[in-house]
Image (cartoon, rainbow, N blue to C red):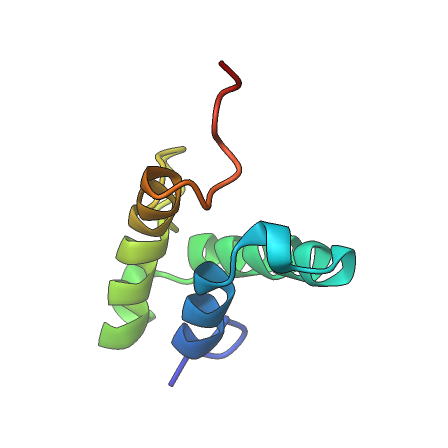
Length: 88
């Protein structure tokens, strides 16, 4: 269960598991918009008002807003599914 205005954990996991190369342009744009919206909601919502599930989700997805790569992004990049690969 997600907090009001937040993306559910199921949606986050589903989006993270599907490689960007297999997503349509619409799916990619939707993921980006949802990510921005969820990050903004995470920033505005006081930590004390977040559910335990949402706190855990924020930790995993990198919604701490400290410009650090999330655990999900690190894992995707490690297996070559992320968008942050450098050209060699």
